[in-house]
Structures are given as C-alpha cells and as structure tokens.
Image 1 (cartoon, one colour):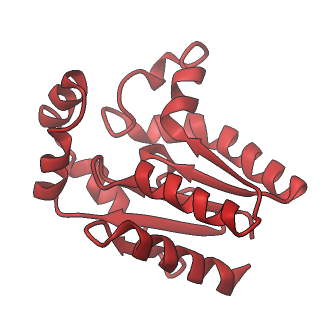
Image 2 (spheres, rainbow, N blue to C red; image 1 turned 120 degrees about the horizontal axis):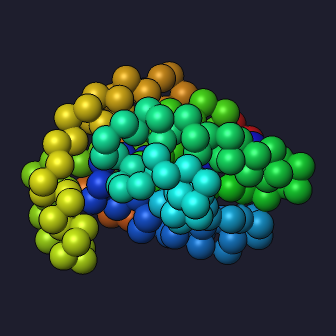
Length: 170
C-alpha cells in the first residue's frame, strides 16, 4: 500500500495532518512524499485555465477531471518506487485509486473559526463562497474503505488512527 489521500472542507486541518503523518511515517523508516493538490493545481494552470481559483469553487468536477490523471501518475510512480504518497487537498476528493482515502471532518462553524487565521484573500474567498455543493460531493465520496476522522481530535491521535489503518491494509 503506497497512497493515502486526505481531503475535507477547507479549514479542517488537512495540511497539518498530512505533514504530521508524513513525519510519523518517515520516523518509522518509510520513504514518504506529500503532494498538496493546490501546488499541483497552480502548476497546471498554465495548461488548463479552468483550474483558476480555489479547488472547491466553481466547477470543481471539471477541476477534478483535469487533475486526476496527474495524481494517478504519481500513485503509479509511488507503487513502482516503493514510497508512501500522501495526496492532500480539496482536489484529492474521491480519488478512487488511492489505497487509503481519509476524510477529515469538522463542523463548518469550526472551519470558519480556523479561516480567520488564514491570509486575508483566502478569508475573503472562503467566507464569500458556498461550500454546499463541495460538501455534498465530499459526503457522497465516502465508501466502505474511507477512513472518516474528527478534525477536532488531537493531531497525534489522528496520525495514530491512519497508521493503524495503513498497517492493516498494506
């Protein structure tokens, strides 16, 4: 097993969890790469103008369709080169080829509290965008293999739960 996706609403703690999980796996001797979908999206914008804006905004289904082939290639490479790939971000939503999909859940009101710590432009975008469609897509992407975690739990507890599940299926 080589790929883990971490997705959820903005402000649930996806990046923090991915970085903490990556550190924990590396401390166990597991070669690990963390891929943030926002960085990939910005890189691909020069080829696909449709990727402009936040991943959860606008026609995110089109954004997912454009970014998935690149994520799939990274999963194939991780399998071939035997390292753990952690794909993190809103555009990891529903990536079915991942070995362990993780959804970080937090009530919207808690997410909004966390948004206040973000850069002003991010705050403006988040507070002026309806996340209803994205949240519905997130909920519909849950399947029996999805590990749903409470984003209000301590980060080390979340990491331990993912590693426990990862050990079971690898």
